[in-house]
Image 1: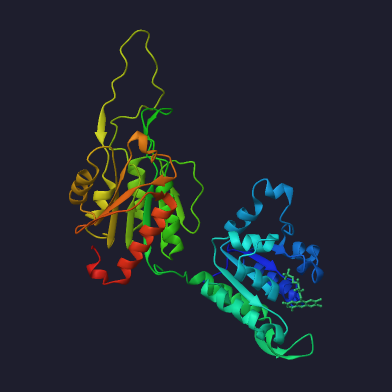
Image 2: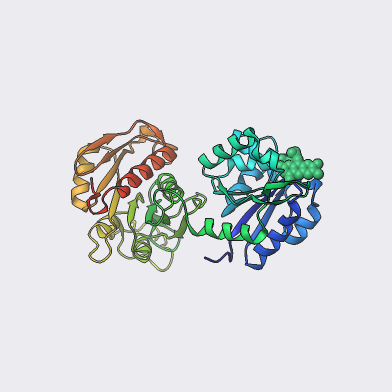
Length: 409
Ligand SMILES: Cc1cc2nc3c(=O)[nH]c(=O)nc-3n(C[C@H](O)[C@H](O)[C@H](O)COP(=O)(O)O)c2cc1C
């Protein structure tokens, strides 16, 4: 695992070991990582923002209420842009804030807002480390999934001896490498393919046939699968959405491009087809813009059928994903149509949702879905698309933790 092109967000807390973080930045940068630093008020007592900026080659972030970045909600953007958040040194104070969900400065707010994994290198006096309060915080942070490196035993700057010395920069580099190599989560080691959004089917260079799909549900599913540890590729038609964290995004326009991108993403263990792929496309896409011809008749559009991506993946001779999930957006006879679709397409599960105009599902943030498998229909309550995604990822993870050869429940 290389650290080339990795983005590390480094929080430098207020401990004597902060000087070692300067060395850490050097070691990360020589391995090709970009380091963005947040220096706490305490941290700035030990190392200067100037040193940190010179070594990272970037502006150092120090204040929550920095108007320029906060106009763009800078603390959220900071926490989402990184591949990994590293806190070194992690002081007793910073750990207490993290364990208790405080958000009263830039570092703690960013740490609460992040959706990325967090690795901490604690450093403090041995008595501070052994104090029951710190030990409670350590237990909480471990339960929250925070990764620890160190502290080491040894002589301390304060003259005492014991656990509390921050891990050496190269030890931290090794821990970062390991954390980035092995995604955590119940779907770690699996590959997922998600399709999302509409397709655009060209009529001529400026016109196309499209639909009202926003892509929100598919993007949320890609993010949830990636968060569960799956190596996730999202193949997306045109949308207004930001790339989902942790997933590889492949942008396409037409159904045929979407199918080609899906084929390129195989083999995959899981395929979730949420894209609203146009059933038909104009048989001929004109090379030049079609012109009005006086009072002549309007041009007729001759449509031809597009490839069926869900059916193709479900019946893939060479690389059928172990679990293929389709979405059925229906306006009438939801369950009956969705069940028929499950059989027709040959997929394992169908997530059915009613997209009638009055539901607000198309383009909206909420969804009411029914999960249809070969054996049962589950009616899920109304919830946000993000919650549908998380619940679906959980169901997929449960299935994959059972007998893989028997997973189409
Ligand atoms: C000279 C000096 C050294 C300190 N070293 C540490 C330390 O190694 N670890 C620690 O947890 N706190 C240490 N502290 C206390 C922290 O600086 C203090 O708790 C501060 O509020 C932490 O700021 P932060 O939350 O921004 O990290 C030290 C304080 C002083 C004055």
